[in-house]
Image (cartoon, rainbow, N blue to C red; front, side, top):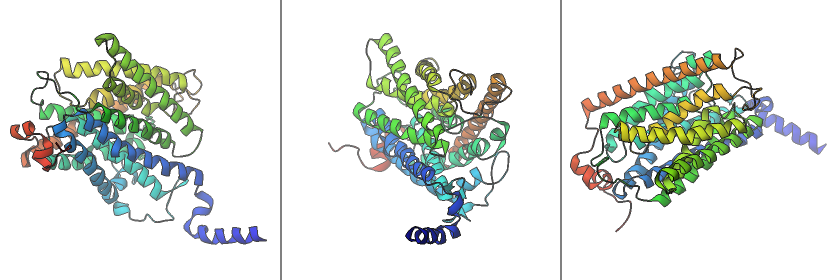
Length: 427
């Protein structure tokens, strides 16, 4: 009798909100957790990782940039970002039917989740992507220009890419696979970073005097937070507490470990020393590369992807800095851009559902590996072209209205004092 009374009360409470048949508490709990993990990646993970990599006179500026981007992107996501990314059936952009989250209430559902949970989860992706671009122009962009650039870049690069791949747009409808953000996050931020680094030019003293990281301990702490948060990034992208999420978590950890060891080993052989910066950067390369493939590859595939990530991204870093003399300050393009694109390509080659390297997951084209590879390459081409052109136009337009780069005096003094009148450390 008591059981029946409780059941009746529960039904009266939840049926009017549409929860009785659709909401899955396990899925909801996992995505709530994943949302917190992905936000942890930016605040404080990425902020500490980037902050430790710059010189002490610029550490506070990097922390400030990451913090302010988190706030700016959150507001933009609510006002128009979510609607343009996930509503409407346009090929390249959505519509404004859910602007200001119009129509979203307690009873709104997205699959087995409350729509509010899905919105917040996707918001954390929208936060970290422009925050990653910060690494390209660290130590030399004005704070006001950074704020304007980040909002514009989010609007004209991230949102269209998100809609095209995840929001029912052109690439997703064609069958391009990007489980957790190889194109949407890493390719866009990497290529956007490359364009920004070239447009702003080198820091003073680049390749002439040492510009060493000022706090390797901070780098290690930030990198560790990124590693932990990445479980929410990849396994959370299953949008369910299921076997796909479990496998995504496993392969994410494997690739990160192998990528870190590979980078460390190459550096050790070349210089005779294994460094903290090297193993941490290798870990990030392994994570970035497995991201798009974490829903389709298995443990053996993750071992291969981690090995390729650590080696390919290592030499890409050397090529960008030493050969092309591009001052991508914190290696955003060679680690995230190259890694994300490599993962997008590799998932077609090693993600077969019935292959030794696959995870048993569906998704690869029924026409076979080559057909999926062509789709993945088309995705890389479209997103790359879109990102490069849009990023350049944003920077070019901003430069007509404001100074983007700090003055020589400001760069010499350091952005902490020059831009914020504060210091990261009290002397």
